[in-house]
Length: 424
Image (cartoon, rainbow, N blue to C red; front, side, top):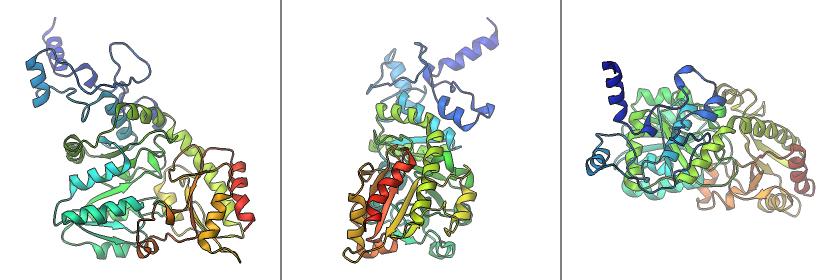
């Protein structure tokens, strides 16, 4: 045996076999769909073709010294499934590759990912600057809990670049936005925010849940951290809960230590579901977007709809920005808000509820990003805990309906929405 062979085998032996390089060499510049199907997998000695599910809480070592080496970091391998699990690691590596990030950290839910971000990058005395247009639970987390620990929080209109710049303070450490946002699918200028953050030593965190890496890669546009509620499109069928952060290895190490210590962990089974979901993400998003474009055209031309919030419409104020930031041609996402006109006998809220209740196929649920089209009334569901003033600032009116366009025949989606709209 040559000296080089001995040295190479010695290096490899420091790693458990399932921690070696990906089965797919990402240095060969594969396309997104290939990465979505194959990246991140580590085959075991069983030679399985599909990714395995490692439903184990702990791991066995060859000796006390081997266990100690794993725990103190001398040997890289699995320690405890709260923070090292092969199924979770496969999902993390695949998602990181899709987002063009160095590393991902998986969490138990999308809100778990946002909490992890807060705990990793903010401390007492810091300032968090966020967009007005956010998921209601995100605002609740910031206002009720981060403020409780002396993190200052303020909000600006996501469209207003001047407002972002004016709101920056000496203690601003994180700028946080959703793009597209919930529930109005509004668009932030990520490149502008990136420049603003870099000039002021601020982290830019972008929730990419609605677009997914199939449409948009915020890291490529200058963001530092990407947030996902994997529960939505990454799964795509409304089966399990999960979240993730993606970014540089250094930033993700900070997030990892929060998950390790705080137990905000993704389960192995859920990670396996998300990994399989990623295989069809790009194909599903293409179909979602095609359906959404047609539904938006129907809604914008309906006489009982006053406003459609969807950047795919050519007259939307952020249409050009969305076209620039979304790399999939014709892909503007599949979430939209539309405002229903009150009738002679129904006020705005009652009219919105009438449209929702008149559907026969569309699911009345607060989840989104599902193969099934879903519909909800944000003012009384996802944003009901906000004050009336906060809802107004976020643009959540009583007549607003949020629609997540699914993968059914688009003619059937339109027909179901028309039942209520036509009868107002």
